[in-house]
Amino acid sequence: SAASYPYERMQKIREQNIAPSLRTYYKKPLLLHQGHMQWLFDHEGQRYLDLFAGIVTVSVGHCHPKVTMATQKQLARLWHTTNIYMYPAIHEYAEKLTSLFPDPLKVVYLTNSGSEANDLAMFMARLHTRNFDIISLRQCYQMFFVVHGEAAIVEILQCKLFENAAALKGVNGAVQYPRNFLKEAYQLIREKGGLCISDEVQTGFGRTGSHFWGFQTHGVVPDIVTLAKGIGNGFPMAAVVTTKEIASSLAQNLHFNTFGGNPLACVVGAAVLDAIEEDGLQKNSEDVGTYMLLELAKLRDKFEIVGDVRGKGLMIGVEMVTDKDNRHPLPAEEISQIWEDCKDMGVLIGRGGLYSQTFRIKPPMCITKSDVDFAVEVFCTALQRHVERAAAK
Ligand code: PMP
Image 1: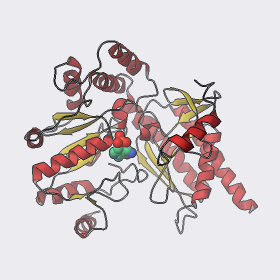
Image 2: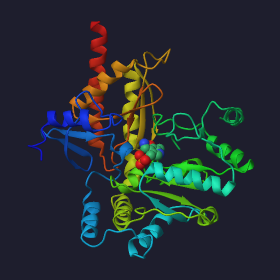
Image 3: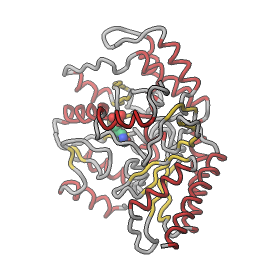
Image 4: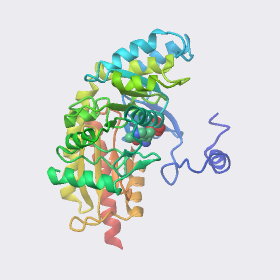
């Protein structure tokens, strides 16, 4: 198919037959041929270190052999809905997944995507509390009917929180919550009869290093947790984990999901959990993530445009600014050039933040320290080129 679909033909099909809302990255988008662990290979055999895979989905490594083998075995055995019959895979997976949660988070619903999991979480919270409004922080992964940062109620909440003292927000560019922020937010919400939902779609599965789930790094226990992306290492699956009590509110209504928890998904999910444990990936996130954070932080002293380097484990944000005094976001076209240069030198990174000014780094958790050395050198070269371009102007 590579011969009958050359690059130009695919571009034409994209323009004519694929929804324009599906945007590709880079001026000349990558045409992928293969993935292996932390590496991607394009149609010309060029190799890229994928520092973005973890944001978009891959947690344990592209085509991780254990996950691939388990999937292949199941592919030849049974694909079906298992919601109306019994099959071992969902039981085995439900037991494995919920064993990783503290009490009382012991009931799981399996869905097909993170959006679906978040919709279900909000539906459950509304049914259980009989309240309608949902508060979410600005610049988080957003849904309809959600009150954002500016609304009055949130303002009261935030004032109260910040007055008192004051996880990690992925989409916004690895922004860390102030100390005690979540603890106090949870307390305030619960005092008002609300429930707390933790979206662990980006922060979960050991990525933050010190803990398996992001909420644990803040000493809180949510009422509902949503999981996606890394849960399936690239396979479309997601989950909502909650308490028996909240789940029973949903049980009073008809709830059915054809593919949620299908045998293939459950086998993939279980293999991902095994890979995290057997390959020591949570510890690797902590060790390699801390190393990377410290190496990148050195660039802050070297370059005026590196405004902030932050994160935890293998979830890192590097914020680009015009200068350290004003801290305005670096103009979009200048950030894009640095980003394109990194890609041309073989390193893929993500973008995020209100002005798309933050480079987001979330590699597969199997990344090594020597990969970090390579990535930091490439990034440093791209920044140096920016300095030279600015000086030549
Ligand atoms: N939550 C977060 C934090 C996300 O980043 C995303 C996707 N960007 C989602 C939920 C939605 O997941 P999905 O794309 O699988 O619907």
